[in-house]
Length: 257
Ligand SMILES: [Zn+2]
Image 1 (cartoon, helix red, strand yellow):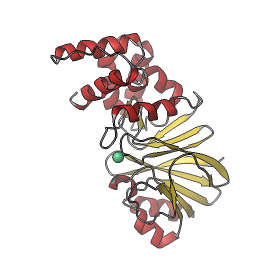
Image 2 (cartoon, helix red, strand yellow):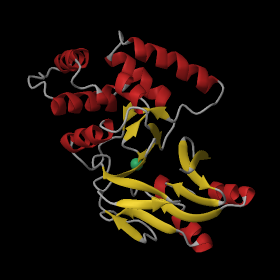
Image 3 (cartoon, rainbow, N blue to C red):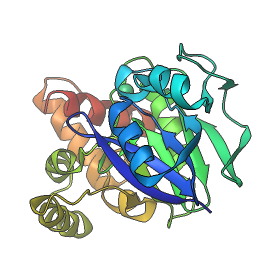
């Protein structure tokens, strides 16, 4: 299995660096500068790039990196990705530094969004965040809820390498949804302590997300109840308390929180 470390980019992006000896892959290089600096400093050879979706802060560095290193570029077939050499739809297995990784289609944030899973590690771009999930720019609530379900079904010990440091902000909303959730209260304290020392809150574990992330908890009675209460406050009624309408209600509330 490869080692994973991070390269900070922009204000709050993480570009994940996968290494095995001097061989390297990066995930979602939104900018090339910090990646090149790290590759040069560590004497690494960039063999591949994994792209989760087409947003500029996830693929903006690909052109400069491919010009310099000639890596394989794995990316969603459905989306326009600079320099893509391996278009993927989800369901494939790909070789990442000698480790087979599963490609999972997770439409919602964008329609072609992919996640990459190796045993113990999930690279999920802007689909699942620490204590949150991505905005629905292109997909429907039903698509995103199904995508989150497929990630939630992975082993609980899986580390969740999302693409942004949004956890602390997301936890404020999570606490508004479930103020009585003790695991969530503990996570709020733990993340505040990490962030005060400027330590990343990412990766979390899937177990932690299942216990504290409101978007993975849409069948919990407490979450359903608060979604209904919030709907009433908005002058609406949430009569269908199935997973998708509850997810849609919570996601819409998060957009204006
Ligand atoms: Zn995005």
